[in-house]
Image 1 (cartoon, rainbow over the protein chains, first blue to last red):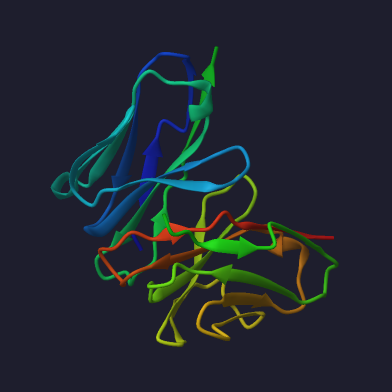
Image 2: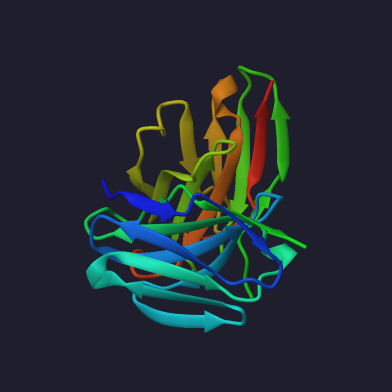
Length: 110
Length: 114
């Protein structure tokens, strides 16, 4: 099956700092989604981005499908950004299921 | 915005008992999924469901698990004879179509087996 790797595994930021999270995948994908898992365990859908660039407020994401990676940018981080960020992919030939990466644990401190 | 809703939010059950986790997918969605996340680990696919039958299942989804769409709105996951290792967060998701469509996730049911 497809391998999905995220980096860094852990990240600590001061409030106001910017960061880039990376997701590498080993095969062609039909779908890529970024999620934020908050401290209560809820999975918040951030982006559906199989290719190209999207922006939503302080967050933006870019997927370069031909090079098999996606980036999530967080600007002017806030304490409420803390949690785990997952990318998940649906790979071509893999049915409709999402395969999740291992996540990036982000902590934003005052 | 339409949501996927899951009940209960937290379920505590004795080992060996049966549990049913309930989900109401988004109304015009046709594909339904269950995922599981053991504490501290990544989210894992369990099963997908389309047109009233299982379209794909993972190795985790063994004979103790079953899914059902008992009516036009609910989608359930049943775990027979629960084990301690079934303790996890269970997420339901739905999508409008299969493939190249985003999956929308519910808030999850935290299942604790004692």
